[in-house]
Length: 350
Ligand SMILES: Cc1cc2nc3c(=O)[nH]c(=O)nc-3n(C[C@H](O)[C@H](O)[C@H](O)COP(=O)(O)O)c2cc1C
Image (cartoon, rainbow, N blue to C red; front, side, top):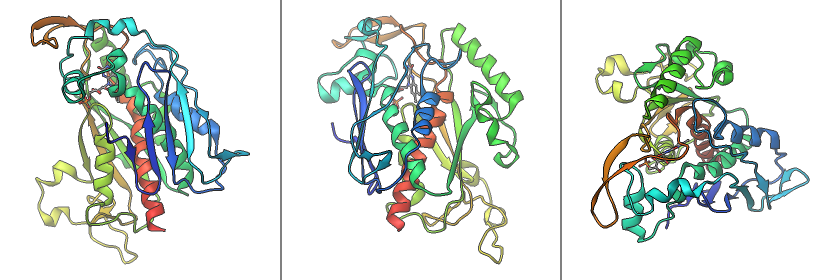
């Protein structure tokens, strides 16, 4: 199974399955001498953790990180940073019904066909528990890049969305509600909707918007490793992601050049920023902003027809403790992946 390593200079490899002993990772290429804020790392894990509110999965996992190497007296040494987060709350029986049955729109069928074997417990390697390692890697990455700030938030759930530009939002309110939406009135509607969806045994999708500020001019490696190309790959590698757009995104396709061009100020900044802070694959010093679309996840508590591994049509109903809407928990994952990209490209540009 290739594809478990992300990054060029600041490289994260992740390992572990949902119901194995632990999820973990190795960060290679972290510069030495960085005094790590361990509370900040654990805080990011707490933001991702299940069981944190009434609108996410009710699995109770403490998700405490243990570092194994690469850190001495609180500072990075430059050696590989190994870490694990033990899995402590598995209920593998909850998954016995999918041992030989494929959940529609999950990864069961494709994993089985590709590898000929699959750890069905909790989704195995396809489980979003894998993103724990990304969050640890991203929390360390955030501490490597000076001054750059990364704020992600829930911008829509189903048809409910924030009807304001991000500049009108107060990012300090993102953590003030369970949905991670900085607009209080919209957050309340989103929360009610997610609760209703959960009662119906269904799931709902949504979007996360991410804003990266104080980015120096010059990050990005054309032509294949353009900054937005790497951000796109990072986001599209997150479980359940269906779309990525930056700057004007798909709306830009409806506009004229005379409307879309970002005119310069004499200091090189631009009067508008439909480019989303990146031109020619290189950061231009303006805010980088993008949106990530998450699908309604596959496991619903309703009866659906599917097939078993012998190709027989069968009926199945989701069991276990699942997320009715993954978007609030995806916010720190989006930030983590953005931090991994920015740190990697910051080191590449040095
Ligand atoms: C934070 C987070 C939590 C998730 N929780 C669930 C879940 O409870 N149940 C589920 O079926 N899928 C869940 N998923 C999505 C699956 O991991 C994902 O749909 C699956 O691996 C198939 O991959 P794909 O949707 O990217 O094609 C979650 C995703 C994220 C980002």
